Image (cartoon, rainbow, N blue to C red; front, side, top):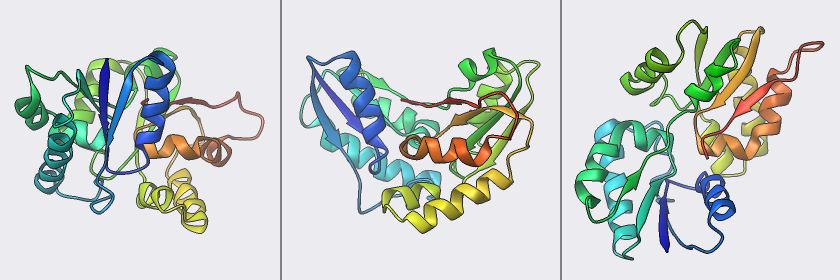
Length: 205
């Protein structure tokens, strides 16, 4: 089986590792857009155009399925990607893990790119799966870019800025961008409150 995965940059590593664990027998095709990364700050139209180009490159390798390892692309470009590839190649999106995070109760924070935060798609997920659960949406300005470029100073600053926007009573954080999973423990350390129960993190991969 051949599985293609697409994203703007190295956030794809988290999704790739998850697929490799589940299907060690599969051949993996990775399709990225390093020149256009990050997708988070782009307009939905520009993001969709770039995502379609990345998907076309992946589809040319004739995979059995295409995984969109990017929350922002899934939120804004999934219909266009499915119109391009299906029914020949099933397209699987990646969205913030609001449903499993909400199942545990407690205050949930969703760390996501500015393009995903407040989007109708994410608001729909909250309405559908977070009944009776307090949810705070946290836009993480610049964090994906900092991770992509391995900029330690910028990672520290952007994590701290997002942590400042995260209420202290949060018990669960949804990592709504696969880039964030690469710095998950730094996020945990920034949000964890002294004396509180261990913070629960939910990734997308």
